[in-house]
Image 1 (cartoon, rainbow, N blue to C red):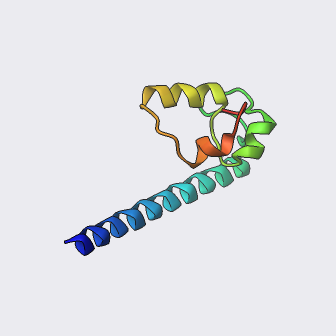
Image 2 (cartoon, rainbow, N blue to C red):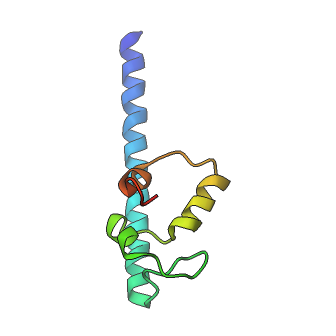
Image 3 (cartoon, rainbow, N blue to C red):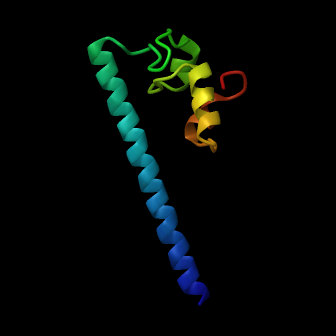
Length: 91
């Protein structure tokens, strides 16, 4: 019984990691498209320039800090790699 539970946990963890990797790849591909069309560094929501420090921390981000915070609040955001990468003072 315990072995079955461990196998299920391993499967769920693997699927979760694959989903995170796919999401990261999608975000990177979208950032490349923004570079190509000249909109990289501009917030998708408000249109303001994203600070260089944020782009250095999260090169694939499409949102300024204010708009990202608003989306987090609206979607009951749970911390992920992006939030952890922000570090103190950048989130």
